[in-house]
Length: 222
Ligand SMILES: C[S@@+](CC[C@H](N)C(=O)[O-])C[C@H]1O[C@@H](n2cnc3c(N)ncnc32)[C@H](O)[C@@H]1O
Image 1 (cartoon, helix red, strand yellow):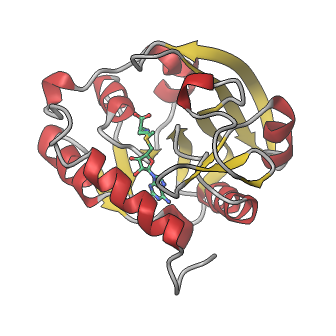
Image 2 (cartoon, protein in one colour):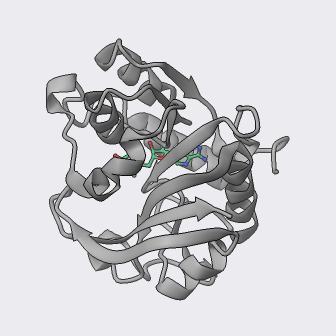
Image 3 (cartoon, helix red, strand yellow):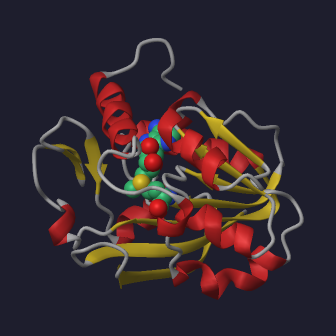
């Protein structure tokens, strides 16, 4: 994976998310963290998981909170030190919280997790980086482990779909020079071909002020 020289996009992404999670734009205290119901359909998989669950790109911890409320051991991860500081402050019961850039690889042993959650954090990368990251996720998943994720849909018109220069097919440069990828179903089949896709649905989430269209997916390690 790219590791030595950080690209401007990586720096810009880190700065953007560190600012998002520094508490100046919204109240990030625990009472203000909201869960949503996107994981409910996968409750059986979640409840029968007896390894810790990895929450990749955890941000403010919406999914971390959901999993903690289900009594699970959660390892929350993000590139933003502010995000991880908030997680530790808001969720003293967290099993672990780690700050790292996923593009440098995932700092976990092979076959460590039965379930990895990646909510709206896999759509920022060039094709080669996303493939490398998905290989890493497969490496740390146990045999037949699950990756449960959501990514931007190409129809997500209120959140930048199709805006800015197209760097690669369906990967756009934002005004602040970060990358944002928008998927159609063929993209999902292409990128996740080394997983068995058990569930895939394009849907709208009410989590944001404006409607957000995304894909929700359950993928099993082959
Ligand atoms: C849209 S937020 C999603 C937060 C959370 N999963 C949720 O759905 O509420 C995307 C998160 O992914 C993180 N992220 C983006 N690129 C990353 C990378 N290369 N390594 C680690 N985290 C990254 C960001 O810092 C940010 O917190």
